[in-house]
Length: 277
Length: 296
Image 1 (cartoon, chains in turn brown, red):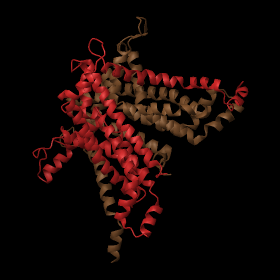
Image 2: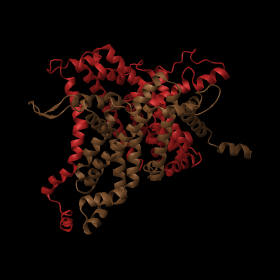
Image 3: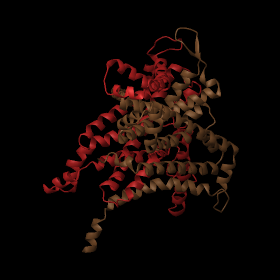
Image 4: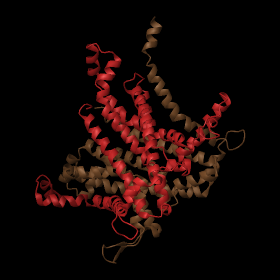
């Protein structure tokens, strides 16, 4: 009888859903890992990883993507932190419209964004109704294309970055910090760089890592704007290789995992607790 | 200097209010250049014919050309199927780690994993599913060797509607977990106790108390999932190589080289997508707003 009672206490269906979920998570990853280890017949080994990492194209595209990610993160922070700070301190009436804009990337998928960007910036930018050229077409030279890609990535990361910065500012009482710094004679730049930013460390890190996870494997903007990034490289590699793409997919997954794991650590599971109260 | 400005921050003056907007000007300039302008360009283009005159023909063509209708319909079906099944499965999963009685330690693990999986899309995801359910995939092989069943003989194909849906599920149900876990946390224990004191059993509690409270939030999350799948491009392209003509793939073909031989129609297609996405986001935020007063 007591065995039966104890059995009834075990949440049977909860375990069923949980195990099914774990299987759905794990199986594709396990299959990818397993496949990537079988490059040499009948033995398991890291041959495919060695080959994938040794490809100079891999090193080039991967470094390029990481550079893009870092540029995106820095530019996003420079753009968003002062904006969110200013809204909180001086311009609460702008909050609604700015929040609305930060949600727009959810309405405009990457494929539409890149479509619009190409159509706008592949032609020289003229003052309307005249022939005065303000800006050369950005897609015709390398630096211009890089600007477009980074700007596009900033747009893709905007909802995440803005949200984590804004949440971060809510928890540190920006107003008091600012007033304290001002009374000690600090100017705006000093306040933002030496008072606000250090207090936002956790928020910035989680926003940055999410942006990183989005940018490193991104394909749509990179391939349509024609930049030599990791995403398009992986796609092309998949067209004529079997084992190396599997190896790199697994590595990409691990990178995403590391990024999310760190976010979980620095926010102390804040992301999940946010709605709990 | 700074000490002089300090008291000013306390005083509200209409003149300085205008000056305050300068502080957010860089943000608005950025949004204008890289978000608004591209969208407006597509919008304007969808109402322009090849000679640059105003026309409604492109927008009307969206509803008459079978090629375009088919693409939209396929995208809508895939998004709806994965939103519904991903939504149900994700809900059950979120239920199991929040109020379902599983050990507390499993919850952060599941949430972190969901965060990873909902961000794991595109080319790597497609390759992972080829390694799992492709012709020589891991599960395909297991089923063949152990159960002597070749799923490709039964009509299954990874590079099809079902295959793509299964692949999308990998980022769909984790997103549902992330959205629903906080909502399920919002269910107050008092409600359950009150229901039980009044003699309700578990089914009655769920049917008459918990579900009516959670329903807007579940529907809202499913709409979010719908939009999530609707805008996806890279996963489908990497998996099927464009063989499954969903709307994003057709738009991609249009960007590559005016596959429709009518730029205006391509812009109209893009606007149609934005329209559907906007409706789903509006629906999501409306439903989210409705739940908020209960789940605080």
